[in-house]
Image (cartoon, rainbow, N blue to C red):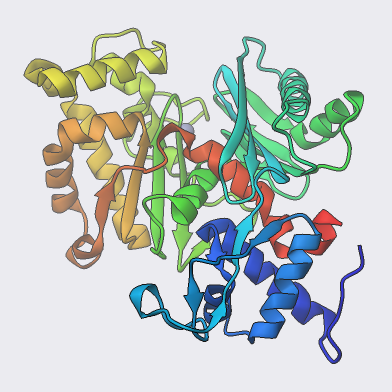
Length: 412
Ligand SMILES: [Zn+2]
């Protein structure tokens, strides 16, 4: 496929315009061509040419929209009257897809995700051997199963993988994943080998931290849509987190920023799997909640979640009272988050989603006492919209980024 150029149009401008259009359709869903013209500020014939090119790549379909006739693409609804019919441009999830994977403790979940963000097929598998080599093989096996599914599209172009640890983006080396027992594990390299062994080639593979992907998904498709300053905190065995600041992911110099689970919150507290004492995750993670609820510290996350949700239904006051200390540390950590990042939203995911409604009053009281008033006035604590899928969908969005940046290179 060769890109068609309009006379005088620089290739990088066309690449930028194609990218902008495909991103609008991926995040906004089907739109009339006139709407795309309005949103991009490009002229009608340019948009028509760009849409035709995306259609030739298999990424979109133009459907004549005979029922809706618009004038100059400006008027909507009942104001629409005589004018040019504006075709509906629809992203094609059945054709262009990515693979997404969420490696969590004891389980790998994967999905095939179509352009536009809908999950087309899923697989998941639990594991007991958590060596990086085993996980790489498991990811490759599930990828192969999904690629063989009858719903797999013609272009499955990338694979995004979420890891509960500190990941070096450029080569997928997992510098540290304490809850998997990993230190400097070359998961990216192992995954390339495992995919090649199963005859899978041509996928662009990217690995990233689970909290960074959770916040990405909630920012693009969930509760944090339209907000520029967002912190995501997900309480599981570990506490994953990610930060969007000024509309962009906060990365730090090595991409390792935003590891809020390892903020020291209690001097001389419990030993964390990272080697330090009194990390936030030792005070508000699944282990801390299990201890508070009288379960063994290594109780299954699912079991903790069931107990929290049942307390919400029955209003079991004695159970809620036992969670007071966890609530206090949740509040102290959140006060630090509010003071450090001045977010508009803090999204509480994972088990925190079940915990927070039970202890909201106590948490608010602790934050109120510890956070500065000015940033406190601007923050809202909210629950995620994407639920348990946030990280998996974030891995999908991570996989989409190169396709959206240069559709011609990715799909030709
Ligand atoms: Zn720690």
